[in-house]
Image 1 (cartoon, one colour):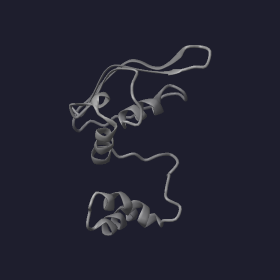
Image 2: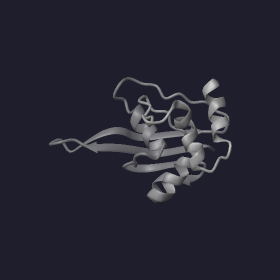
Image 3: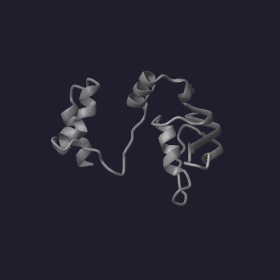
Image 4: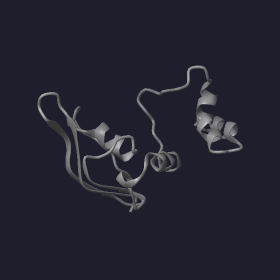
Length: 128
């Protein structure tokens, strides 16, 4: 199983009103080869769920396992390494380095992980 979510809750403090529950008792399993779309109305928790799946935020309670590893039990260092090796994120705002070219922005993560042919791979990706 690629992804297993059990009883996942996420709430945020709301000034003067305690907590606002964004995700409540979410359960989901995704198996190898499956394709899943996260859809819903604005404010329904899609971005919150994706942030949790990417390890950018922590759930309030429940279990979130990716490839059998419990995300909430990882240290920040381990989580950063896990994200770098297993998760790809494309933000609506691109967060590109303004002083770099598009090619340099795409090749930078590859270079950080010692990919010797990072420029060639980045060129191929940009041509797709």
